[in-house]
Image 1 (cartoon, helix red, strand yellow):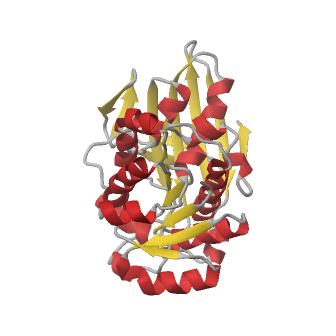
Image 2 (cartoon, one colour; image 1 turned 90 degrees about the vertical axis):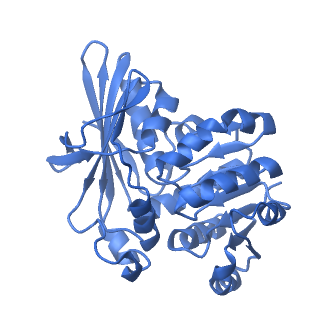
Amino acid sequence: MTKLIIYGAAGYTGRMVCANAKAHGLDFVIAGRVKDQGRLELLAAELGAEYRLFTADDRAAAHAAMDGIGVLVNCAGPFMHTAEPLMRACLAAGVHYLDIAAEMDSYRLAETLDAEARAAGVMLLPGCGGSVAMLGSLAGHAAKRGAAPIKLRIALHVTGGFSRGSAVSASENVTAQTLHRVDGALVGRNADEVRAFDFGKGPAMAFPVTLPDLITIWHSTGIPNIETFVHVSEGAFPEGDLAQMPDGPTLEQREANRYHAAVEVTGRDGTVVRSLLDTVNGYTFTTIAAAEAARRVIGGEARPGFQTPATLFGNGFAETIADTHIVDQ
């Protein structure tokens, strides 16, 4: 089946994914919760698309909504509420699952469900857009430059503000423990161990955070020691009452704020290689990448079980999205 369903279509990011799916000429329907019916009706009329209403944790309704569907893209965060029920609905219906989650638990869940997904012939591809696709490509590129890589440090530069949905997801997913990967295992680390990275304009301090790339980069490169960091530009992180935030950055704000990422890979002999990724704003990248990933999966690029963008599409995936470049430092 070649029809796509986009869940969470009425949200800020979901609407952008829909616009890109339409630009790709994909056969898709949009979906969301009953309380979003009004917005979904307007969006469906604008897109010339069918819409379906169901709550992610209503198993019977979710299964019924998968009728005639081959691929689902979940854009409805916080993913701690939607990823598991929709993954399980996809497993039951034989539908490939994609999402744009930046939440660690979605990836741990996909790992846990890997064997079940393989048996069902279903692919689980969390992070088909966003930082996981960006950082996975950058990490894979740099890892191939190094000789016998044993350690990787990677940092994302976030700028230009958050959408209201992303801010809510972030606030609900504050990780109590900061993790890194040591000799293949996820262990706690000191959250105060900041480190300087050069994102193209000189050193900038980044703080350690628990990113899902601790899972995805491990899966795609096999490097046993991984640390993840974030540098947030002043004013990018939301403050105050999140309910009063605007829907998301405007087109002008997105165009004025590009994302960057930097990586250091250390080889067994102590040699260090560095690479830099320069791309469009994170929301622009995410929504283009999600639609492109869906297009490719519909076209047959799918493997059962838990996958990452880098393992499925290759290390060059990020550079196929908009104005994205990786350069060696």
